[in-house]
Image 1 (spheres, rainbow, N blue to C red):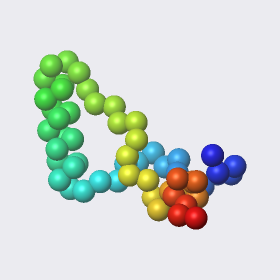
Image 2 (image 1 turned 90 degrees about the vertical axis):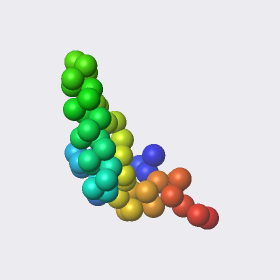
Image 3 (image 1 turned 45 degrees about the horizontal axis):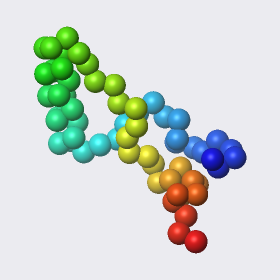
Image 4 (image 1 turned 45 degrees about the vertical axis):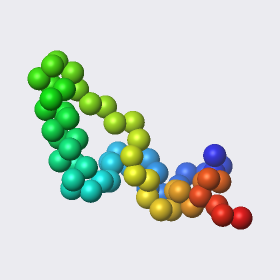
Length: 59
């Protein structure tokens, strides 16, 4: 959607608060106890890719 690669957009890492990470850890443990797991498809996006997208533009 930007027409070119944006630095930081394809990094295989999700950024979150410690509280979020702890909650996800607990959710993963509970899911595993029932034979399931978690798969996160999307998360925090660094500022540069957001601004590069049309959704991040204010004008």
